[in-house]
Length: 387
Image 1: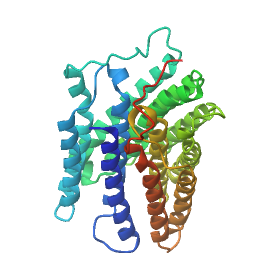
Image 2: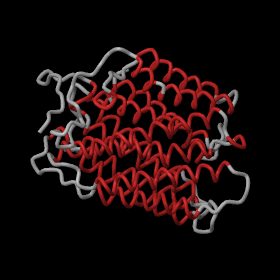
Image 3: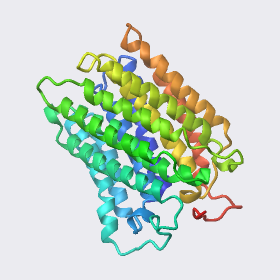
Image 4: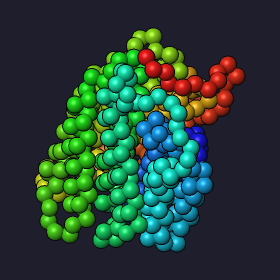
C-alpha cells in the first residue's frame, strides 16, 4: 500500500478514537474507557508504520509494498471497530492482529524478489551513515515493540490491554518516530547527525524502561514503577537534547516549512509527557496522573507523525502541503487540549472540552496534509539525493 493509504487508514482510526473519547468524556458509557486509547494507539501505529515502510527499502534492500497484506491489515483493524459493540475481547484481538499483520510486511518484503537498486546507506562514502545506523536500530526496535504490543492485545495479561498500550505508547511509536527523524533530519539539515550517541542511549533506555513498565502492568504482584518510569523520562530528555542540536537551514524548501512548528509542538508535548510520567510514578505505583501522561505522549506522537509526514513528503508523496498556518494552529491546539484535559484528573471536571479541541487540532492537521496525496502538475517523482 502507498504511504498515503496508510496515513488515511491511521487517520480514520484516530478519528474514531477521538469520537469515542468525546463520548467517554461526556459521560456516555458506550465503550470501555480503554477502547479509545487502543484505537488512538493503533491508528497512530498504522500511520507511523506506513511511513516507516515507505522509508524502509534502502534499509531492507527490498521493496516493502505488499498490497494484499496491507489490505488485510486495514481490514482487521476496521473489523475490530465493528466488533467493539459486540465483544471487547474480539475488538482487542482484531486490533492486535492488525499490528501483527503490519509487522509481517518486513519478512514478506525480504522473501519477495523485488530488490531495491538505490544507494547503499552504509557505504563508507555516505555522509549520513552514522545517523542511518541509529535510524535502522530505532526502526527495528519499533517493529519489535509493535509485534509485542500486537501479541499482548491478542492475548492480554489479566484481560486488560494496559501492557500492550505501554509498549505501543512508550516504545513502538517513539522508536519509529526517532528512526524516521534520524534518517530525514540530517538530510534536511545537509549535515551528519551530531547526536548519534545520545540518540542511541535514548533508544536503549527508553526500550528497557518501556518493556519494564509493560511487565510491571502485566505482573499481578507489587512492583516499583519508579525506576522504569525514570528510565523512560531520561530517554525522552536525551532524545530531545540530541534532536535540538540539529539546525535546519534558514533557506529550507517551503514544502518543509510546516514541519518546524510541528516539531516544536512535538518536543513540548514529549517533554511534558515524560515529566508527568515520572511524577505519576513517584509513589511507586501508577497514580491518577498516569492516564494524562499517556494522553500527552499520544498527542506528542500524533504531532510527530504529522512532522515526519512533511519531512518525508518528497520521498513518499506526489503533492505539496497546504500552506503553513494550519501547522502552527494544529500544534498549539494539541498542547492546549492537554491543558484542558488535565483538570479532569485532579478535580471533578469534564475532559470533554479538551477532547473537542484535540479533535479540532486533528482536523486541521488532516486538512493541511491531505494535499500531499494529490499529484502536483509542476512536480514529478523525486528521490533523496546524496550530498
